[in-house]
Length: 350
Image (tube, rainbow, N blue to C red; front, side):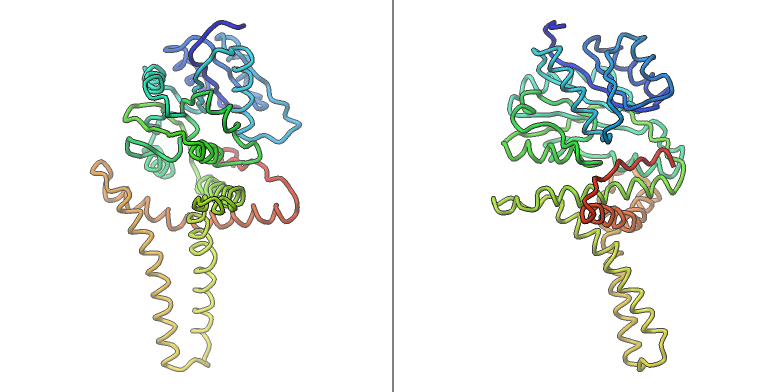
């Protein structure tokens, strides 16, 4: 088909079940065609449902490693091939519903602001109070309107910008959206977040192990993103992900190891009273570093809509999250030394 259209929608997913049905229904309610669903080996009838409601389907070859970046690229390639006049693409994950009227608002903004490559809005959690971990994700989604450095998995992009900087990096198992936005910024493109509902996300995170796994994925993204762009500073550009990576290494590895060593030394009988005092002070200093990042997290969520309990909950898990993030960093560099490609880390299957 070569019908002239302004925007197409690319949905990615695997075994999303009812979430995918809600996702497609919310898109069809405000946008008819083209809608491309990219499936990565579902066994729950996702493909059949998408086809039954008139959505075009791309089945990924699962003999190749899957990443969300690969799924989005496949959908974009299909869109460009079958609808060459399409100007914009809305990416959305299959576990999200599209807010009514969002597509028109996003397209209108990009039409009126040609220097912007992408636009996103507010992503909200479907059941924020259902579990502790859903609450954490709901707090994570919060952000103010205005120019941003990156959009997440749900956003509208100008297809022209992809022709200039390339597509999502398919080797990245996480953080591919921010890395793409970094390259867009290098080329002078800008990104905007509107104070407007965009999508409703359904995390359905039930267990601590799922939260831990998701945090491991974040740490992996920090390390891989830094590794990809560590030479950018030669061009006068600050190191990408350097601050996040070094923070993870310090709070997830260096300080915990230091605390263990200090406690081990304190437990020996060979340390003098003065030495014992020094060890206690050193431990308190290390603890103060963790208190400081906890305070920063509290300030970051000082919105009056967040309760004191929610803010302290968020701060506690920001501090605790340094440990699984460090695991993700270690996982990336271990695979790199072995010459192995990293595989996607999925928390929902735990």
